[in-house]
Image: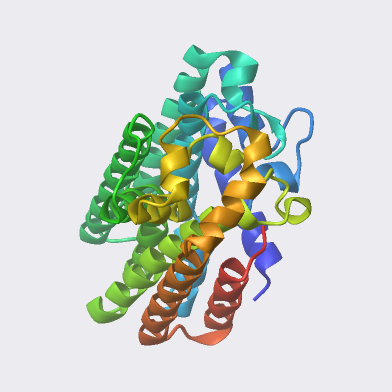
Length: 331
């Protein structure tokens, strides 16, 4: 099983879905630009890794299904993911995405909202294409899971934004937020892949848990790299998370300790020159060790669920390989 062929097929399906807007060339261009297919800097790096749809297609195959027939479902997942990225960039006023100017910074906020909305609607239309390959009841079940994941995704983003105006949040609030913002769509992708293939309920549920804990582990690791990652590898300033006031897991843990870090955090914005000292303070207060432990725990839970799912064949081997790559990354 060649991942390059699967990814090429996925890219063709995504282009087919977005081609519904070809009649409006300027509108279509906004979407092809965001997807990394057009404009300055277009190419593989600008397209992203397509992790969610790739895992969905591999799950279909590992459960004995035909992954080619699931391409519209995989496209729907990736389109919703990119809808969330376009809106997230607007809400965070992020000037760059994958090393290029964001859609809103190129076309303005109003048109970027339209582009994100179009991504969302295109995802729904892609989902309806499944009616040609699956019985109606299974399409309805997949749609139910998909819509619930979209709701959880927006719920997680709401919590993330609402936490920005608060001095601190509790650990339970942190986990609730990332369960929606990061884990919901990954969990839905693997769960829907199993259901598409007609897997037994117990197996499908194991894939759902696998995607959920994989998403949690991925976010915790991202929080770790956001403070202690090697800038030369991550391509991101290790100061940015603390300077921006992000409620990452190390910060949330340290605030609960009521130590020197919490005292400084409550005084207001952190300057870039303070970051090295505060990163060391987080280590002294146990935040680094706690974050590593949490990442390890979520990783173990993801792997336990994956073993219960028992993915078969070359696709199963690829799922394990991709999982290890995601959970051992340095960037």
